[in-house]
Image 1 (cartoon, rainbow, N blue to C red):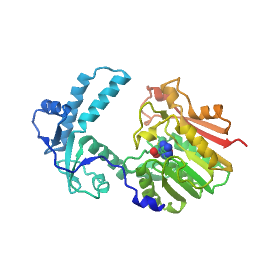
Image 2: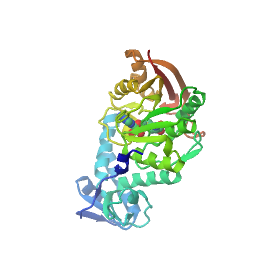
Image 3: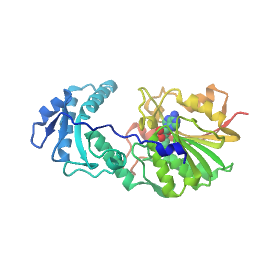
Image 4: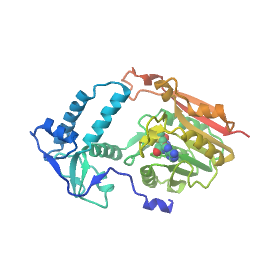
Amino acid sequence: MNKDLLTIQADRPDIITSEIEAIHFYRKMDTKATVEEMIAGKYVLVEEYYSNGLEVLSELKKKLLRKYKDKSFQGQRDYRSAFREASHRLLLKVKDNKLLVKKAPTIGWLELLYTDVSEFYVSFPDVQGMNSSWQWYQKGIEVKTLDIKLHPFYGTYFPTRFDHLKLFDKWLKKYEGSKQQVIEIGVGSGVLSFQLIQNGFENIFATDTNKNAIIGVAQESKRLGYEENIRLNHGDLFENCDIKADLIVFNPPWLLAKHKLEEGIDKAIYFEEELFPRFFEEALKHLNPEGKIVLIFSNLAQVVDEESTHPIIEELRNNNRFRKELHLRRDVRASSKRTKRTDSRENEKVELWVLAPKK
Ligand SMILES: C[S@@+](CC[C@H](N)C(=O)[O-])C[C@H]1O[C@@H](n2cnc3c(N)ncnc32)[C@H](O)[C@@H]1O
């Protein structure tokens, strides 16, 4: 592992370590009045039972839904932003890195992400986020194409549907080129790098802008015995990348952002306009003469909005840098066989693109 990675600090929810002035919320208190105070800017500290916090949040939701009736995209966005702001004033106390209230879930992240502090306040929604992440981390996600379970680190994107992994697996099994050197941009939970290693690829330079992804993949590579094969880097696209590769693999975010991106999961889902042009320009410099780019993508943006452009097709059309060598598509299946798809995602397809530099 790169030496700098030993000092990398995980992103974690903000906490309050000083004493605060807050309304102490006990069962049977007036929830409506408490919620009014929260909306007006006061902190509320959940006392006694974890479920008391759930009660306050549910009242807050009701109250804001009555206020934000506009069902348009912007109206819903305003509602979410108001909910986000007020709900983060609902706090829980942590002592000895555990939640102090009764019947609260045990969340290992309160210890693992906060080794420097043991007593603090943290917002209820952040606790809910950590709780759900902790359950995934502990239970693991079974990935059939890998025959292993992944344990995704807090704040890291991980696959919940597997069609794109099957497509990648199918392509890997047929690949006949050099397996010496790969660059994976946006390693996330490590799933594609692990598929590459299991298919005989030797050296992978794997990078991500999300620090937690890098910490998580470092742990997972160690657990799975893949440390020798993978060199991790925290950075934007090809930042710090000093090699040329036989393959550059990227499963990028699939939707064009219409908002300012936040660090973390947001950047796994949405991309800024400049991401693809920057990627293609840099990729060209990091490919061996016979090298190829493998991109995993989806028509999701087109399914949602027919007018939206496809950044890979745009690249092929507008620039004279790459030629399309292969384009595979596969239907995205519903998460459960029993749920019949009625949503717009029923036309969704995942895509695998192989591009080679023009000579
Ligand atoms: C859709 S996720 C894919 C993760 C994983 N490779 C997989 O297939 O499940 C996209 C990943 O790209 C990362 N990413 C987004 N923009 C990036 C950039 N400019 N440079 C490096 N990584 C980036 C995100 O943080 C995220 O981990």
